[in-house]
Image (cartoon, rainbow, N blue to C red; front, top):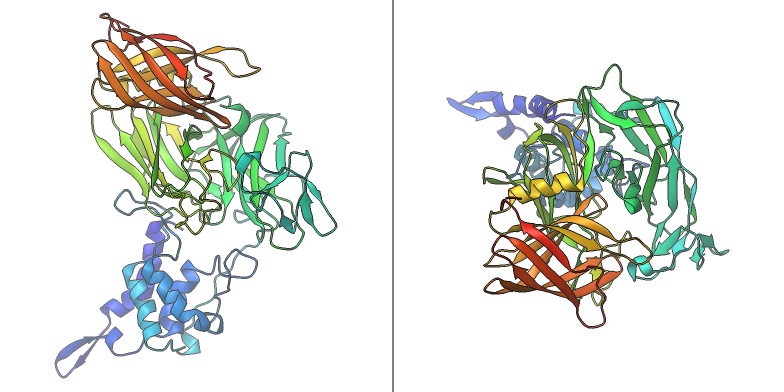
Length: 569
């Protein structure tokens, strides 16, 4: 339901109360002052419209709220939740953009619920009760044109994994008690949660575009989320579009994904889907068979939707840190229009802000989530597509609480890095966009992103560096990186990797004439290197440098050379 239709329906509920009056002794008295607020006439329309989609049997909410008898025992708790803003769940700061799917109640609705509870929660006349909405228990968008059925997942009753993150116990075997035990299969238990190894190869005769996609778990009682990456996937980098592509997400609170009129996504014969699935064992062995419904578009596609993963895997959150900041960036290398955001972290993330730095020097927060909640992961759809011109740099800033004061923290004594499990952390904002002109965005490359990034940074301090990089058992490669190294303040090294832009702060920068030195902590999953980087900048803007690993760490980075952006380069 759009914001406009919600406002219209709310007007139908509250409009009569606002304009109906009664004259008593020459005084005009509002009708709302004449009668008490009742459930059937005043509260039920709010509950039915905003709450029962989740608060009904078979859904994720803990109690049904379909009738007075079901609502009345929870009346005071409902008041507390709506007055505090905890319910309905919505986490985007209203000062930074308007969204089609804003779930917040109007203040008038909140006041009505509070007045009803304070008056003793009277029922009212049964004849005033509106009809209970009808819900489709199957496909919310109707029968799909193609249903993809994933392999059945057996979720153990108990996961006896540890809290050590991605290096923890991985197993697909269950003992007779339904407890997952050690093994070597792709599925596994970590931190008490279950992560199956799921993938699918799409079997269709020809390329098609989809106008909508719906992910439907069969057992929502144990399913936390599923993220579907297209060809290349989470472990293998960018898809054929040149972007780190996410096809769909299902989690608590997300709705089926319908693209704007005439817009959609391409799917291909033989396209590989890698599914990052996450289950919560609940004490009993359970099964889930997730289905994915595709809805074909008709005619020619007008705009291809592309999803990019803006964020970083290069971080480490110290043990006991209560407000640790992680920064990342994403560069827009062509004119685009953003249609959705999906901020994502795990149980230690407390907030995330996405800031656009426009080529003209202006800055704007596109979406700020000041109180992130891992249990409620939502897409945010702007009322109007957000234009981002080429050269716009998106800065993502998030904070994490790894202290004992965080009630959701599984282990405050452990430093935490990137990982797929809940006990690890993530720092991403999935951004869906379309090209400003033409049907499809131009496939992005590391080089096109590098050039746009150089143009977005202050002149005289940004260097283009072809960085030799090597990993064990992999051939060395030259990465087209950008080093921002100002004469005053901290710097940043931007390193493209697998379709993402890794951001590593250059700390403790010192200059002695044209010679420089700084510290850099390189965090790439299990690889952790503390480096001292030093070198010189020549009069013509050429830069050279070397890396020196500290302590017992090793450096995958070699000596490098580069050139100052704009210095005839």
